[in-house]
Length: 346
Ligand code: MRU
Image 1 (cartoon, helix red, strand yellow):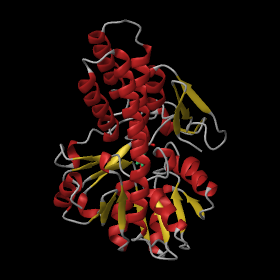
Image 2 (cartoon, protein in one colour):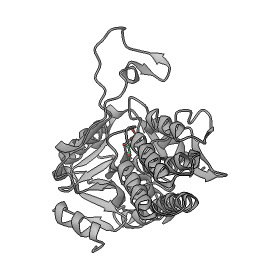
Image 3 (cartoon, helix red, strand yellow):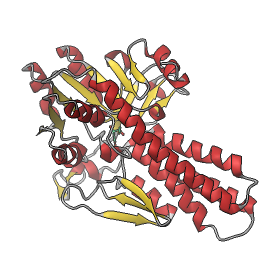
């Protein structure tokens, strides 16, 4: 099942708001549809958002009807800006848009056909590189997974959150493919239930044993010694190794420290943001309060109750056992390791 793909100048997105009850693709021919799909989380997960936005830029370029190259370039920059305004936390979105804009700068004096072809090639590059990075994350991460391990994960950092294979679920997939007898506990991940709707579904499709729990059950399982390791994805990793990820990740990391369970974060280099020294600087998205008041379409909270809905939290670097990147496993001190990873030195 492809999370997103490009065909006939159209971007197809698997509508993740409908999963697992129905498998439907949205066809986008307008960049505004892509922006809306990112905002409403029909496509979600840091690397998938980045790849979708890259194709969104191409759709914006294709829709331009004038002949003037300078105006085309200005139009594409505006398209990229509106895609950048969809979700603030996952840095992969800005990483992908920066790549597209760099490509645009290289091509800005070329004929418009060359500009569009160049941008499409760059978007395909982002798509393919993400897939390859996830495979490498899987290989590196597999070395940290003992046979017969029981692994807890949060949210969905799987094929559905990337262009394929997944980051945290890439590690789990690689261990399963290596023949290890692993099992997974998936946190349901309130309020939008990415764990219940997406991770449980994705792992079941691959025949990887998965048990669904509510978020508040994780501590009880660790107390009973039932969890060997936790692996999660990331939306942004700052220069010191602080990690923004789905709300609830920090609580898990604290539980891991208390119960001496390794806490791993799996992410490609496109998630690393060394421009920010630490996690306090990461913009944390706050989403519609209705998400907390409802489970699916069912309202569960009293009308008028004050609600707070931050979509992400920040886990401080000192709670992270290791970062599993496509360049290798980074252990503390993370600042050195991250800088070396970005230079390609590990
Ligand atoms: O709000 P979402 O569903 O986009 O949040 C997704 C996560 O927090 C993932 O763990 C993260 O993006 C990593 S995906 C490989």
